[in-house]
Image (cartoon, rainbow, N blue to C red; front, side):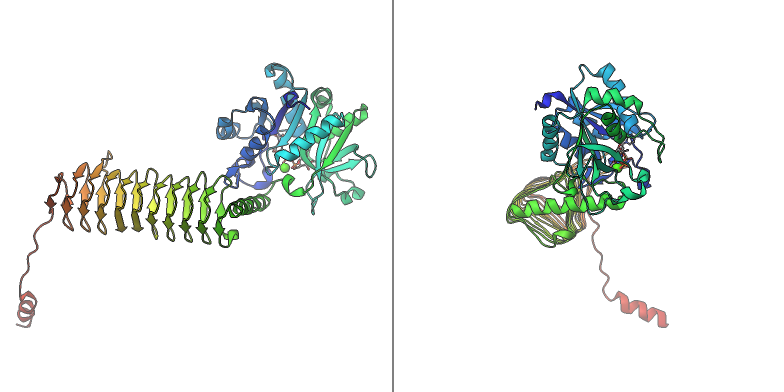
Length: 470
Ligand code: UD1
Ligand code: CA
């Protein structure tokens, strides 16, 4: 079967009333990604983006903005009168914008995100070999409640008579265990010949796409259903609880994939790992760690408990101690972070450098072997190699209006509790005395003291006591 005959429709216009959330359902996230993006990714394994049509309606602008970068097309369904109504909109839209109708349409549901490309391939092949007008992907889950049920013409037959929605089930139909996954292939012409004849006389007062099955049968067309091997990949996400069930399944799959690649993850059930995260062999991830977004971690690293690493890159042999927060940071080989270090966007930590407890960095480059071990804020700074930043040293990078840069040359020593008022340069090998407020550049090899001299008054305490007793 030629894939070039196919277009893919993704239904994503519904509100998701059962979620009780302000956010459109298809933008809720599992495995660190919106439901709809998971479905688009699956669709893209079947056809190119320009042959994917997303039906949007509820909060259409927001949904479109969130997935536009994938290159898919959008069909508006201003009022959502059901999944059948959504396909009526697609028919009208394709007639105007189609540039040649695809011979077949695969329909995916924006809220059925775990679907695998192998299953979609199988569905397409079955659709072709059965010469069907409609091929339904079905499943037999443990609990069929809430789903539409597939009614076969007779037991053991490929052919289907109808799909009946949960709310419209007759008493004797509650025992039907085969569910409709909401994923189908249609012969476009046959679908569009029936789509405008749907009725909304049902429990929800909606036009059901599922009713197309019986309409096609009535005009002598072939409708078949093929069941998935496991029901897990067609589980829908209608409630937050169902969604978190899918999320957990994806996280477990991500952890298992990493473990198969040689990563040790203690108590993987406690870790939150996004699907795209990469980790090298022999790295150890302790319990309660989150690895998110496009994070890449090298080999032989250790990430201790309660660290949250997002969109960051760590080279080999990095130690992340407990409770670190990294966001868009880059860390070179052998560096040590934390406990409780905060690396904000634009932080680049050099080879073997140390960023210790309660140190915050932002847009700061730290050279090889440099150390800021305790209680510092380093923002908009360019720090050379082998620099020592004492406890409590701070870059004053903001004057209330603008941000300014601090430069610290190789081998410089910044004493504890110094404040470096930017823009300012501490040149190579220079020393800043502890407790200094530095407002002027410090030349190479110089010592800068920026504090008042200490006065000591000998015998002052006993003199005061003597005064009081008088
Ligand atoms: C649907 C099927 C049901 C199946 C289940 C599988 C129908 C009538 N029922 O039920 O047989 O077992 O999926 O998960 O199709 N949508 C639109 N426009 C609308 C209404 C819905 O685009 O006017 C979209 C929704 O955003 C969603 C998808 O279609 O992504 C399915 O709609 P939903 O209301 O969740 O249908 P279910 O009740 O789950
Ligand atoms: Ca649904």
